[in-house]
Length: 325
Image (spheres, rainbow, N blue to C red):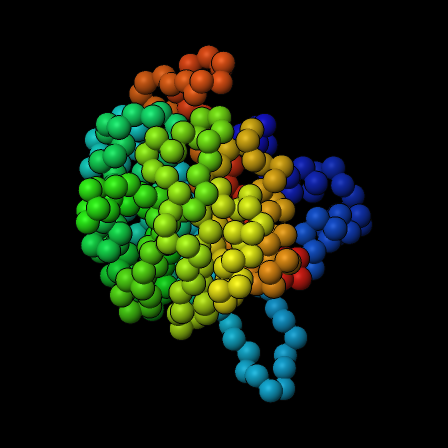
């Protein structure tokens, strides 16, 4: 299981001879990415706050008639800070403190576009099918506390931030949506896009809380490029990826929350395949850790009741149109 190993790469490095490892990696991951050297200050802060940072470069051949465009993309894969039976305020404030510090560090590293994981402000509690207390994490996309919190950071570092949240649509009967808010480099909310494919498999009981989104396949124009957000389960649908490309996206983000037993064999190839098929860059983000809930739940699948629904295995990556990642 994914929770029992550090990574596929660590196993390959352990058992595949060095002379053959480069060829194995080429077949698995395409053209080798370069290392992006990070500032000593950035690495020291990450070590002090107990998270890992890594940087890579995906290059292109220079052209005579167009200037090069360099864009630094940051992805955050995170685990919850406090247990799920802690107060809502404590859980949220803990995540704000941790994510805020990580974004500050990314700003020092010069990140231009930052994307957080799906429903980053809360545990992924949709497995429980309970209304309380989980719906209390919902907020306005345009004016909610997480948006206001990130607007300040976006403006401070001239950083575009993609913030996936549980949205409460106050103008339409407090309807809930799984939504990504796009904040531009000035701190202005450019808009939002909603998850348009909802899983109904295993413990992913998300349709108890929200249904398929109604925003279509929006693309957002920023100073760093044209962005789109294909939230989580939408990655299983090739036509979904295609529509963002037809609408002009240059980078498509896939903020997710998925566990090893369900999706791990598909995870390394779906966003990469989309990059190849649609000739744009893709960014796949998953959370990490195992989240346990106060009360046991079942999902009408014959399995015994339980308090968690698996290990979030991380494994975030960026893929290029040539298949390298």
